[in-house]
Length: 347
Image 1: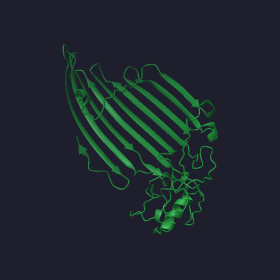
Image 2: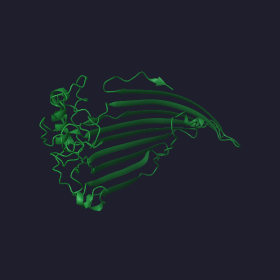
Image 3: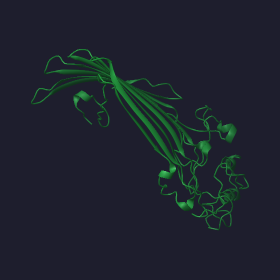
Image 4: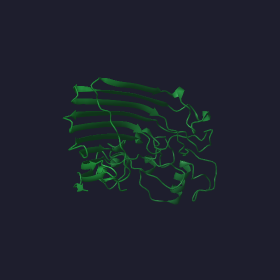
């Protein structure tokens, strides 16, 4: 898009966010919110027949305070928000342990259901004489003879009321977030004022990003965002106003599976072709065509994004049309855990 000159160039939309300023009088606000499972409705898929109600717990506290450090000259404003929540997930991954009723969909064994039964699928591969890695069944929690213990695919005895191939499975998302913001305004004189702000946000959680089949493959999420900004507003006369702005923001957002410190070669017998690193280990996401849910966890290497921006604009509000001139400089750098920050690109 092509925003007006005083906003500088940005991809996407323009959002104006106004922050309160302190006054000569100390003032503040406070707020708390809480909700527990008995006060929440069931998930659409979490029916009474499917079992106990999934956990739905959430809470938040918020507070602000503002005032003057120097009367009529220097003002401050602060704000904090903390969130804690646990939200259940309700999934139906559909694997079955043990022999299933004959569905006539196997290729090499006379009878069975190779779409819904792990035991039948393994037996079909064995009957085909296909060479495989020795650890392949074990990584799914099964032996070469088709005996499964539930450490890969969850245990299912085929007696689920929703159908013999159904499993009610899912792990709650447990997340905490803490956000803090501070702002200072300095009124130098009738023609000059300076404003500065700092935002810090920190988020941690254990979540089910994809339908993971075991808690050890859940995702560990973390987001840390920091934003620093400042502006200087100058009124040379009653017709013109000049505002110079500067901003810097940094985002760190890794997503790791819980078994990321496990060497896949030693623990799972898998040669991934990549050297083992504590942040990128664990069982890779392994999926296949058909009804069986993928095993392993989802992960993304640690990502960092840094942006430095400066912007200056001159505005004349004289009617019938105001005049706006602007200049901007921007520097963006990105990187990951496996590589240093890339050379910044100026825009």
